[in-house]
Image (cartoon, rainbow, N blue to C red; front, top):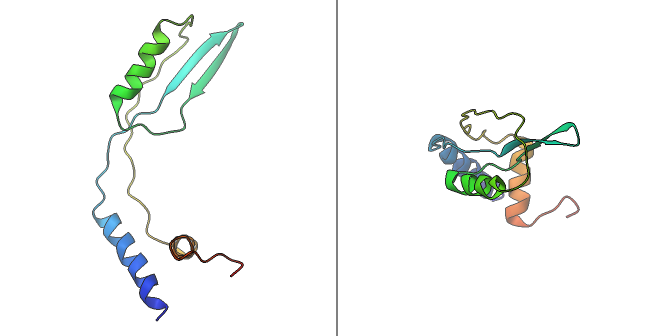
Length: 102
């Protein structure tokens, strides 16, 4: 009986991996020059909407900033990895509400 939910998790993950379609995403990466030093500000979050990122850049446009360097790169999102034992246990405990202390 306890194998049925586990099999469901594995089967769902397998379908996610098989049906994965890479999407283009954008990351905010900015280098600021202040006080004689360069400061790199890189976004940690992937943004799938280019217009949102361009709007943020326009808001910065009127600020007193000096652009030191800019880099443009295209990257693709990778397909998700299949479950290993640790990720399977983590997913199961999250969905079933079972923690390590149980």
